[in-house]
Amino acid sequence: MLVVASGLLLAGCARNRAGEPAAARQAEAGVQARAQVLIEEGNAFYRVKDYTNAAKRYGAAAVVKPDDPAAYFGLGMALTRLGRYDDARTAYARAHELAQRARDSAAAGR
Image (cartoon, rainbow, N blue to C red; front, side, top):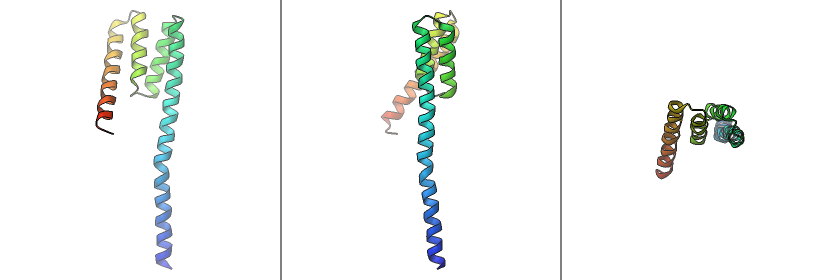
């Protein structure tokens, strides 16, 4: 009886651990979706030449998902239009670094 109970306990633990990656993937998808909404809002502001609000949205996307090169690239575009060239260069450099990291990661098969 003790062996059966131990087996059931271990099976329950395995199920809990198996659910964790799914929950992590779901949380990551939520973060990605929120960042994408912010980027799209930034794009909309950029199209109507409201570069201040565009920069705010792109910056918020970068806070929500700090490894998203699109957020930093958009931020660089908006900052350039605002005449904040040093800040724009920093944002562009970060976008480039993150995009390169993603390419390297994909090439390595991760």
